[in-house]
Image 1 (cartoon, helix red, strand yellow):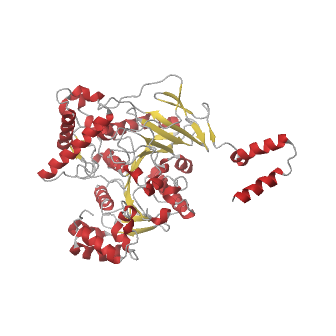
Image 2 (cartoon, one colour):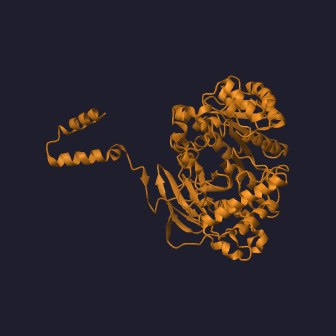
Image 3 (cartoon, helix red, strand yellow):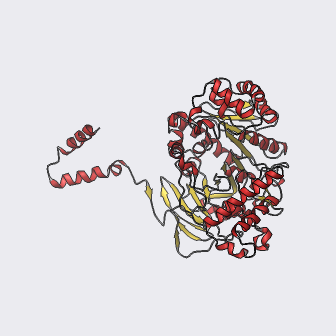
Length: 560
């Protein structure tokens, strides 16, 4: 390579006979990207990329024809209080950089080099003033067009993450391809967003749902400002993955969110139930006890965040221990922090007691990935498992009798499977997605559609499989931008084109059918029509019904 480079430079310099020409040529070589680019990729202008929102005028930047605005304040909030309107500003506010992310615990994924490489997180910088929105739009101004608006709610449970954490969250390609407005947001998480201090006075009445109220405030901001970005406030889709799917599910049952969105997509995050108020109040009381503030609660507003988080984490562990000793947690601690059914902000469980009436007319798209948190991704010795090893794993996890029933049912659901598939198949997200879809379909209102993402990444010799989060770059049409996850191949590009088409079609009409996919019927409890997203997309009706029925009835997973 060095020899080739030397010959190239030597040949280039042969015709140059004056020092002036040599210097000029070297300058051109140093700026080679500019030599071959027809025009600059990024333009920054306070005249071409400006918008006027409720707080004042903002300036973003233009990149390949998309106007981008980042870090826009959509609200503000004191600790443990409900959000209020953001302060207005004078002049033009520069909104070209992501704003603060909610403070959170250190991401453990950084400790696994392979996973850190693939996910390529951007954790930004923390700050409690984190109620910020990011917008991508094809509109050059408030042009009067009525573009669909797609609001992305990030993953990380209700404890972690941000609207910028993955390369796949970038909204430019989706906005450009579908002529839509894409919005991502940050909001309060963990102890800042969901510490229930309602036992300590009326001023803390909403503290257990502060983070949920942030989401409502963000959607209100979208309603009030969509037209400034060329969007239609009467056609808003909320979509989210993992914890983001939990947020979508919960907003469907949040009265204050009624009318703020019109379609909902839940990706690997179907949530039927959430924290009960008795549990959330117990955690709140224990957190205050850990801090020694039982008789001086006002000081909790100034406790350093790290100390507050440590006390909250210890409180969750203690209350979990107590609850388990009493007979169970009722599923309240899946992520440690979550919205609470307080009778007011969230008057009911999201879907556990039937589909919420307020969302009767909201079409839903629900799904998951085939492997989700695949054991072989994280345990190298399992990656080349033969049938004997897979059977041993199944017997250890489920018990021998249950394993003997599950294996043939799995073969029927997934013909031609590999032994390691028995280790990796998901029994958490898909069953819950099915239950949510069954509940929604039973409501007999707007339709619901089901998908299963089965495509497997070739990255790192295929260890990622169709893992949790794998579908995100495809939804956003970002297979190239997040090539460390997808590989960026032509096959990945084709699937990203098809999958983003479906999401865009759903955002536009409430129906994900497109010419590039087989006919995708609405989901019904009897047929369970499910679109498989893979190199060959196909619809399967209840393919894993027997398998999941057996798992739910006889399998009792053990730790491994």
